Amino acid sequence: MTDFTAITLVRLEGGRSKASANLGLTAHATFSGALAWPYLYSWPPRQPGLIEEAFDELARRWRPILDAFDAVGVDVGYEIHPGEDLHDGVSYEMFLERVNNHPRACLLYDPSHFMLQQLDYLAYIDHYHERIKIFHVKDAEFNPTGKQGVYGGFQSWINRAGRFRSLGDGQVNFKAIFSKMAQYDFPGWAVLEWECCIKHPEDGAREGAKFIADHIIRVADRAFDDFAAGGVDVAANRRMLGLG
Image 1: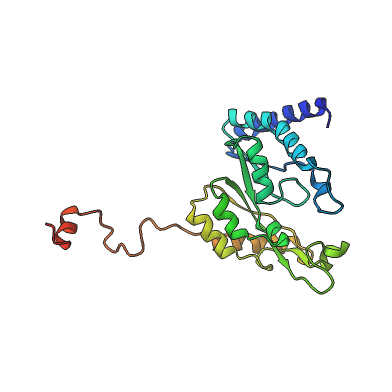
Image 2: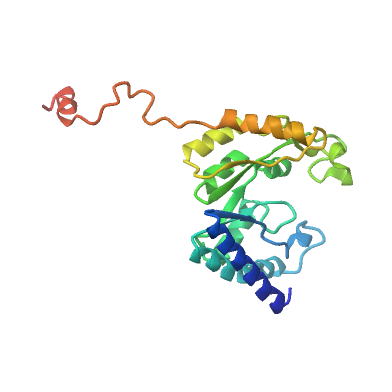
């Protein structure tokens, strides 16, 4: 990317930051870009410093964009996605370090991509819940065989070991995900993203909307064992301890 193109990108994303703010949005979904992605695999050996240079440049280009979003109070939610340099937690942290933990360098959480990578998508929430600002509710399945695994053998979607599925038809544990989101008081929307190599999209949309509604958790306003919903009674506590 030339400097002219980089400047154009900054102006374009700056306009999007203002558009997001004007719409009353608090988070903007995007991808990181992919300078290093062609060199993902460890063979043939990479030139020393190649990945570090790619991430340094990625951070240089994104820093003014992040500042533009910060100026209007909108978070940037990177979709952690194969094909992008930010494709897992480690690569996200490499980028975050280079933008000095910028407060607007946040995350779009989509467990389907982690299922296909065989990444622990529940532990990911524990690690990054403070940065997760957008939630794509999208399902997937991974069924490796003696002939193919994560890379899919150049097959069509229907013949891959890892496939996106209509919501509820895959292997993602959404009960656990929604519990984690409720536990950490996720403030955003649960957005249906539909992709499936089998089911018709209209059926997927109808079933998916109900699926999400059935999984949203109404958080309790007090502990389940606080039967009387009472406050702290210091005098009573001291009497029970033999101190009153």
